[in-house]
Length: 331
Image 1 (tube, rainbow, N blue to C red):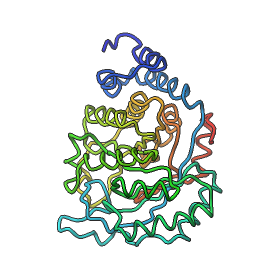
Image 2 (tube, helix red, strand yellow):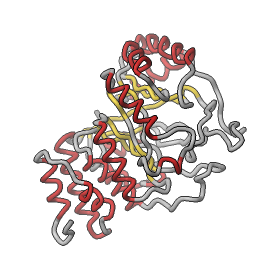
Image 3 (tube, helix red, strand yellow):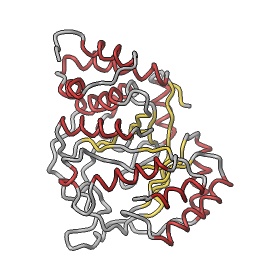
Image 4 (tube, rainbow, N blue to C red):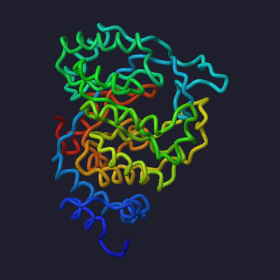
């Protein structure tokens, strides 16, 4: 790509005319020199606002089952150890009951959240826990009309159908990184396993949320490849997480420091690769973007507020103030 011209603006015009960004164009986004960052952000904002205006939606999540995970994902506090057992400092508790989940849903709706995300640890919920969770959703829906997103591990067609019948309409299952790099993060399952869950959810007409983690040692090419994978899968929402080092996990202290420039270019990448999809600013936004979060709103149209699974975060009220001060509207 000829970077002597105003290529970000040209790319934005092509996307707004209905074209799709090529792999080379997306590589140019993440490889862009610092002097072009302003033009890149401006072009990305044009695409974002063409599809979403200046609206921002906020989501709240609940860690509904903590610990009890047999996977070895190298970035996660809840992972098993090399000996196959969990770390003693991991908070462990079984699946929350219906009353607790319903209280969380009511609070999220009262705050003004657009969606309530119920997350459980583990590769797949045991059958009995899965059935108990779906039974609990009736109580949750009776308590609040907030839309529900479930992040409950792997699904086949049978489970995905049961989720839809329960009244939930969203499934989250993150790809996290490229297929090439995935084995460097986890050995107990593959990215193909994650893709199978997303395809099963799609066949059952569930909306699909699948995102990434930036800063786990991936290359720029890996970022582009996962952005293209998500485009091919036609997912509806893409959470972008920024890696926060957790002590005593394999990646702790072993990855390059994330710079603000890389974070912003990554957000531009996922918006420009998937112009019409929800792009969600997620874990690590406070730590890695800080006072520059308003710049990120030119790429994203939604945020998580109130904390994450094993990492704290900015509360809902402070997040709303930041969004409004930047000239955007909380939906």
